[in-house]
Image 1 (cartoon, helix red, strand yellow):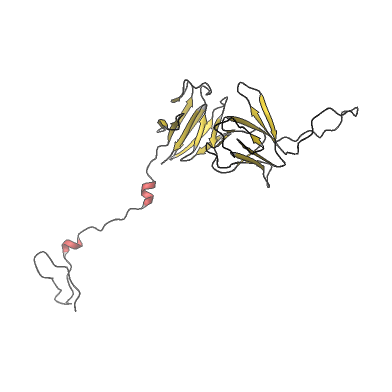
Image 2 (tube, one colour; image 1 turned 45 degrees about the vertical axis):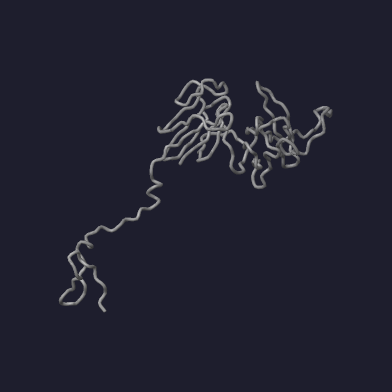
Length: 259
């Protein structure tokens, strides 16, 4: 049996007299084939990064669309201004958008730029981080060996801790507060049940974060242990930001959107 041929609008199917094969309808042959689009074409569309200000009660505030290449945030300069935030320097941070990517750089500000960590990060002596309302600095220097002076006299002192590092609380207005030593190579922080507790800080979770001496490097490893409000580290140099990141500049909490 011959294969079924397309039926022209005028009636019965047509066949080639020499071969007996059906002749396709020219109208069907001229119809263009459907084209399949690839997801990659969608991904190549230009994306404008955005910074969303998080209000005190946790809702979204003003959104800044970073449609240009460079955007300065500060108290009195640049196109992202928070004139009433006196924890911001006049020119505080530089945001750079490149090929749908976003970078931030501290412009030598007094208080720095802090980014919320999403996984364990390495830190070293002198680095600063935030848990709740507590600004802390790492002291990883080796303690003096406790030898006597040139005349063979020992100085009065408290018993030496066995911790390999310490964290120093930096107080409002300047100066240092508590200095807490690790236990061996580890230190935990939170509101209760930790080596270092801040029971009156309502922004700190019960078990907030921990520091551990790295096994394969001279660094310390800072880990957020499932806190509600996150752990933030002061950046050094320029750092790339990703969709969903949070950062502090002055007292402004910002969320990054790149989608």
